[in-house]
Amino acid sequence: MGWFWAEQHTSKPLRGSSAAACPIDHTKLSKSNSNQESLCPVKPNVASGSASECPVKDDIEVLNPLNNMPMAISSERAPGQKVVLSTERTISSIPRGESDDQGLWEYPSPQQMLNAMLRKGKGDGIPEDAVESMVEVHNFLNEGAWQQILEWEDKHSQSTRVEPRLLQFTGKPHELSPRARMYLWLGKYFPETFNTQPPFDRHDWTVLRSLGKNKGWKQVRYIIDYYGAPDDEETGMPSFMLDTRPALDNFDNAFDRFEHWSVPLWKKAMGEVSSSEN
Image (cartoon, rainbow, N blue to C red):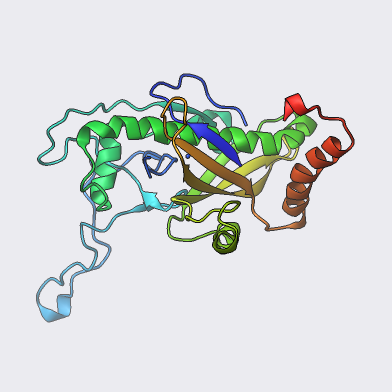
């Protein structure tokens, strides 16, 4: 797990979770075709002498297969909106897709974040002037999650000399991971040690691990549970905890998890790690 303290301005990406906002970009993944007139694929009922009503309603959202989210979110001001929000988007440090020409993933602008929350029915009660801070936390957590994945992938990157990339992600806010479920159960009996509250969000990220330069990629699923934590005692800033690990989909992932936690313990037991480094 990794601990993070929110700051108003985070200029450097983190190496290595209060706003319960999704720490992933759920917006622009491809350009919208909103300027083109959509055609109904259902033909009129000629035999009846009148056109059939199109069963494909205009308000049905077209979902992007990369993240199961709407293809595009408007940057226009919402009806009744009083605070002017920025429409500028921030580029992340996370490489997107299989090749360099696909660029980096983008974070939503504050205006897009507000529109997304309103669309999902989650915007009620959220002050408009707090949205920009929510976006900062959103971006901060996203960078932190990626830095934790880089730590997991480090031994593979050193072997192939190719950095991993992010292919896709899926939000599962209402689906507890097996470990989160286990921690909640243990928290009933050992509340001082284990979580008594569920994570406020969960995501599954599909990471591309190189098989070697120009040899293709292996897809590795990571599970990320996002927890709120007590505010920092010294600064009063909200803090978060990210539990990031490869999913137990195969033997390689299971071995990576075993090695990731067992090797530091073994080195510490053997006296190879000084107390100052812990």
